[in-house]
Length: 168
Image (cartoon, rainbow, N blue to C red; front, side, top):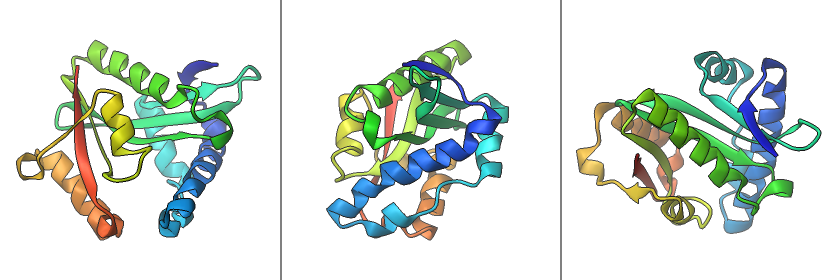
């Protein structure tokens, strides 16, 4: 498998990956998350045009996972990382995070950030194993605070969420 920039004609595949990856939330009593629609093609295209969208492609060069990021508060912020269930538990997500960390280092960003569910095993506990640390919500910079406000307005705060940071 290889990591490369996403191609515009692959954006619908990213939506399919996210829908498939989200189904595991159904098994832990979070069906609303499983049913939440992925970002629109236009929103995904914005990440492509910014050079902040990557895929892991299989031997047939078909995406099986993706990561999109934003520049937030001087850091690179993981907006979404999704791995198709058929490719899960193989280090694919971690490889995307490492790719982003290398990209961020080349850009001179001091850290990676993300927001995630605190008690979902493949969310905060997973990211902690990848070197992220939970941040104190009282000291969030303006960009992260805005992201958390949008998430709350979208109803995500129904379940405990955290901001996490990985220094580079």
